[in-house]
Length: 447
Image (tube, rainbow, N blue to C red; front, side, top):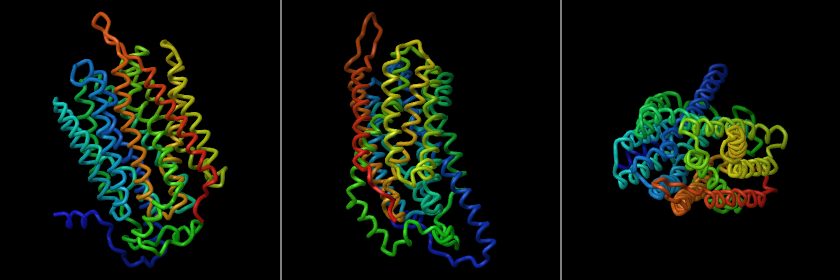
């Protein structure tokens, strides 16, 4: 059972090199565009099947389906499973046929979301959201592996930055589109709707993604683009190269920094809509509108980050990382301090935070580490950093749920939540991320 499954998802054998240079170039460019666009669209829709719980928190609270602490536990289960899955599936992605691996993951995540929308039991929520975490963990690392397979060293920063912005598209679709579904059809629609849509998207990805170039009779991308700025392709086996990841101290420092950044990122992802409703008295639709700024500016920040660091900083990521880190922290502080009734200041704060997070996801969650290690183990790099990132995010979720739940007051039958302790925790984590990232100031791309 296991062996046929592994064989099915394993990358295909090397095919004979195409001899017609015109046909080779036309085919190569067509595949590059198809795969790149598919990675952007596909990864965006992964997020719509991950963030439904963030949008439905208040309806679930009001309906008595779950408490804030229970929602924190359910959210943590997804993120902890996601963390382990990022590590395991990141290593597998270095050996995988990305077309099959990523398409099936999205399809199974969609099915889990549909099932989640038809249950009422807390234990069912926990189990299903844990399964969803595993399938969701197959979205990021395979995408990075595919980018490294199809785009050369001098192209990678720009392509990586644009792809990383895909999660902002997914967050925008969730915060605005899913909020609309929930507002009109109830909390169950926040899971069933994305599940149905992502089923269709997964079937499309199966047709438009691809395996590595050599399986189609195409040369290594470094040879195709005559770009050997990272040195010649390594001759060691993938297993040997994967060990280098664990021996590199910069990877561990970046992983810790990324973990703290993800505390802040997922605090806003998972709790900001509830904060806006409870503390600033927005409706769900209004809160979704304010949150919608975050992914838009996040996409701009992500897309600009790789290009900016390639163009103006010689592919050095240190100063841009510091700038983005300060913007993220500043946006969160502003969101916390702005009093109710100032929608456009809230929008500005959310936009500032989103822009900062967008760039940090590019730099801390993979690009810096991918730069300094062989590209053949990009999946392992992403997996290890992802493990730390989502352990941080998962720990944040249950701690945040506890802090919010334990600082509530009930007066005349109305429950009021104090978010101040949670915000102090989130802001502190963001600042610590900046300090840790600065420790890797002098790290340089591998030549």
